[in-house]
Image (tube, rainbow, N blue to C red; front, top):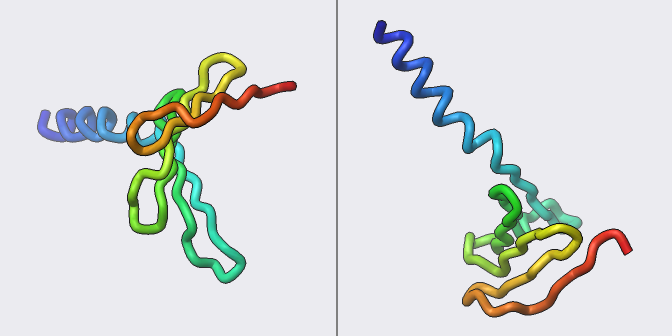
Length: 80
C-alpha cells in the first residue's frame, strides 16, 4: 500500500515538470545568456542570474511581450 502511495505522488509531481519546457540560450563560448521556461501559453525569459527579463504570452496568432513589471512592450504577429 505504501508503494502505491509513493508511485501516485511521484506521478503528480512529474506532470508539471513534463509540461514545463526549458530552453537555454548560450553564447559562442558556451556561457549561459538567458533561460526560457514555458508554462502553458506563457514563457518566462530570465537572464543568467535568474532575474526576469520579459514574459511572453501567446493567444492565437498574437504574442504579447511584457517587461518584468508587466507593462506591454509589443505584440508580435505569428504566421504572416
